[in-house]
Image (tube, rainbow, N blue to C red):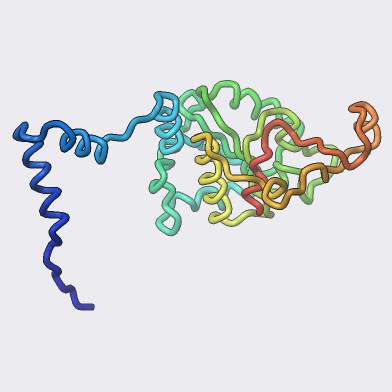
Length: 227
């Protein structure tokens, strides 16, 4: 590969001269206004805080089962979660704001997981990683409970187990949710509203025919991770 140096264009030189004049105090009037407008970004305090929070997540050092092995690998050089500010894994829930439920949750473990979640910093988020913590997976029996039955879950990452790339994709989706700019789920993208299936008893209780819309309040953006 050959590196060829190109001469700087006239626009770059003009910008350098304007910067010099601004530092000297020579820019006035419309020229000063244009210079400031090109270099100053305005936003709200809330959006700035959300931007900072989304780029400085503190995941909890917490694993449940085989999905935890996949979770550990996202800090290695192949994916390098440090690129997105998530490299500081905390051993105490009082210093963490993200919990990744990486594996199956038994009925005996559920109250412990909930206690850890309650001790985490606010605002806090939760990712259900894998089929077991999302929908019991292959352990669909009386001893395993889905995570969203006992705690709020912001995002689901499907798979058994999901690859590290899938978890990293889910963390990036969570980042857009924190920035209050979530991507549309597949129902909104494909105009599939009203196709959610309801149990007959639930449909009668809500006064809607089976098949009417019944989206959950939280975790809806988890569809993005599997889309």
